Length: 268
Image (cartoon, rainbow, N blue to C red; front, top):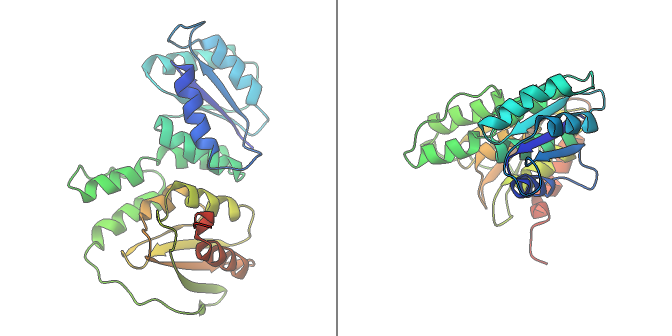
């Protein structure tokens, strides 16, 4: 797995952000190190601490560095001169909280440095899409094609009528399987269910997309946390799963089962 470094002026802020992200993954998260504060009780950042954190999580697959405020960027840049690892180290401009959650989930699924960085940079997409629906500024196009596609679909299909739900899985083409399932968990397809989907499909030999038939949004990659969250699917919305590849049926069956179980969020 790639390593993740969290640079913050406040140890409490960094720890809270990491703790929130860790709620989305299992018991074996990717290597994460915090470099926060400039000394005992001193708000600030320290380039030497950042360099030590980078070396701590380097494992040969690259390190992604998150920073909270401007001077943290300076410390991160200086740290690349002090570190001893030969890993590729990338300073990302991803949003601190949303990006960190997206990165930890995708890194935990075994994604590459490029994939994790791209997903983290697109992490503001779901929030921007929701605010755009309320009359806010339109979201900027992101480098993540799944998030961008979902935003475009939301704009173009906002008034589209809901398509009828297909009660059973059907073969839509060679090696392509499609089925619909109704979302039953009370809070809809928010961050935690999205993270469970990404992790469940890690390593599965299939390409799978999810669309919100009820809202006319998607499809987006089922291996993209940000793409899934950008759907904004709510309780009772019909989700359409489409899969191709050697393990297409396995991927479909996994998501249908998870959806029926409410992603573990139904009341006992």
